[in-house]
Image (cartoon, rainbow, N blue to C red; front, side):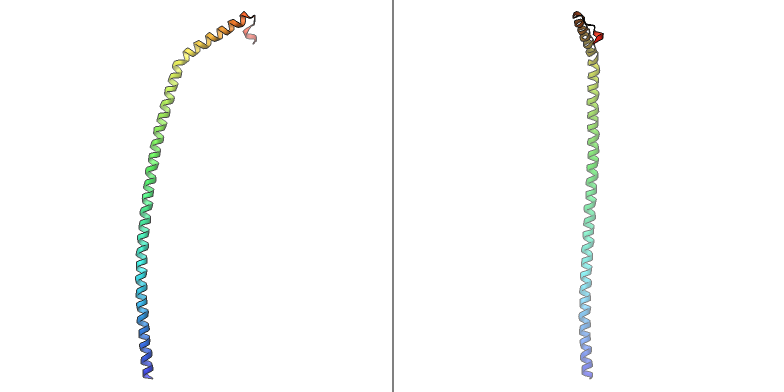
Length: 116
């Protein structure tokens, strides 16, 4: 019986050592997985940071371009208005002259311009 007891005890010790080695191996695997997960998390955070920085630069560039285009548009509209203001007196004279000529032609045909 003492042989059986000793054999069982040795078997338990062997099993216990095997389980301890398995636990040790699993702990090492867990540590490696945790390190890999932490590295992946760091890379993801870095990639997100770079993306956010790129987006911020693009938005700033977009705002700058928008301001420049707005400045160009306002400048062009101001130039157009200045040209229209410069030409308006001549147009007004031409319109009055045409109006007077048409009035005269209507009178020549015996029509009253106010009746039309």
